[in-house]
Image (cartoon, rainbow, N blue to C red; front, side, top):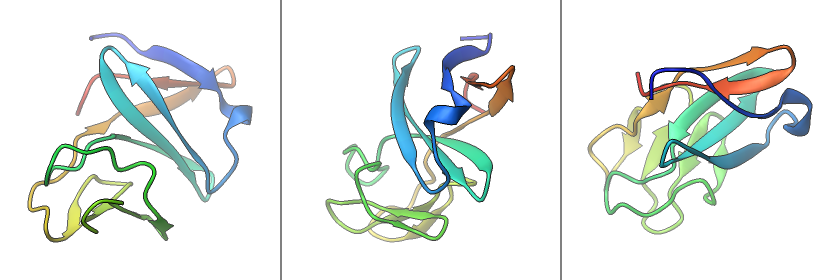
Length: 104
């Protein structure tokens, strides 16, 4: 995946919300926090489960299975049982459309 992928209108995502989209075979969770967009792979590095359905606390997503925490802005793991960061994706808005590119 080398180009930007158009995923949705920016207006479809309100502040504090997120959506999971398929980007070239990756489940990507796109979060809108304080007007900024962030995109992380929707997978817990502890056991491979999805994480986007977990509780969002500030800028951290809590894995619904075992409570690992990840920063949605950076992908950084914040709490065990996970010890590896989650992958992030570049995200931008062009002409009112959210676009995601390859992993950083």
